[in-house]
Length: 192
Ligand code: FEO
Image 1 (cartoon, rainbow, N blue to C red):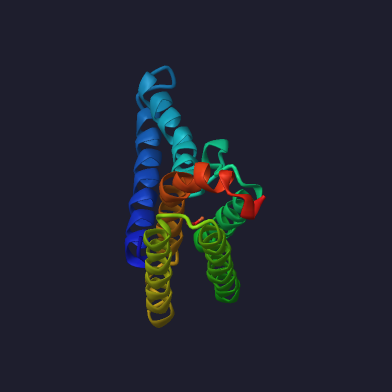
Image 2 (image 1 turned 120 degrees about the vertical axis):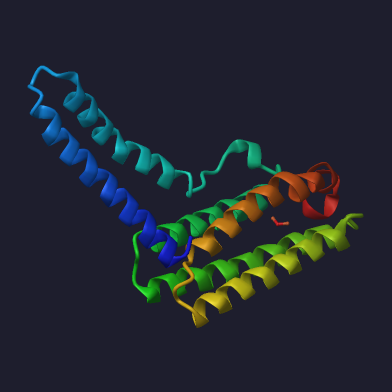
């Protein structure tokens, strides 16, 4: 979501709350026993709850279903998801740019480190889908670098775009390509 789109959403939300407040005041003119203002108060009260739920969907939680059955790789994935959440939080709560840069750099560096570790394991075990898997890693690094460069040139692009891309990509990749190597690598003596 760009800064402009975010601004428009905030404006719509503020107008909605203001409109509800006005309608509540007008509703009470119908009498304190009239149900309308009380219904509107109920609607007003659930807005923050809905907002919090929407915000929560932007964060990602580790699930046992994501496990590839190899502890070091699972630990890497947990760390990456944690860094993505940090980036999401930094973007959402409008943290200092220096902190955003710091999390971004950690994310890129740790992603590269993780990919190398995984590729090393696949190579050692002659994993047959190695080339295709490595290609996915390389394309992801290229895409992230592209997003980050765009963000550095034009700060109106929000870093949330990068966080959403990373979250979606990583979860899909773990549940697809990474879990595909599980039976193969678990049988491989080179990583025991
Ligand atoms: Fe865990 Fe293929 O990245």
